[in-house]
Image (cartoon, rainbow, N blue to C red; front, side, top):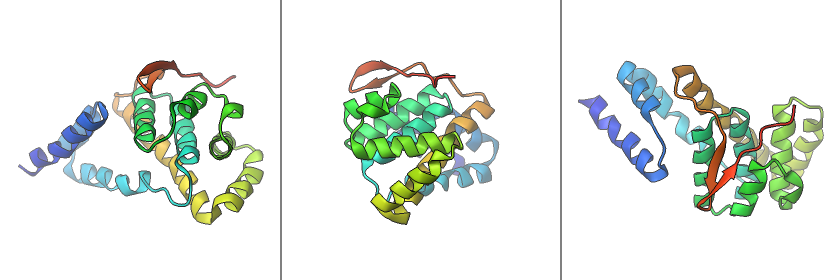
Length: 181
């Protein structure tokens, strides 16, 4: 009975974001305790303080793209749109064109890019992030990167991952640029 009640929030999330939550149902049906722990991730993955939406979503979207899950990438785009991030910013991130981003989004993008690559450039960018938005801003961007990796990894592990080819931004199809080798 309790499990049936928990299907309600999954159904609402699916409708709100047009996003397949069958992997969530699989977790719920297999192990209620695991599903409840899974649900505890929500406050973590939604945490954003002292960072503008453009910077936050540039980092989160780049992190999600690095995991190559199309439905997850589409979900982050929809969430960013709902938070007021412009289609132009989202298209530039998807095309991996950081030079065409506004200053805040560009810093979020470059910080994410360097952090994901474990590049020494992350040190300088971390300082720039901290200078611009403080330690809480740095934590927010760091959480965005970690959160961006949790769900695609989980979905692929459970057999629900789908490669990322194109997503819709502002109602128009947008190809997703793969990282250069």
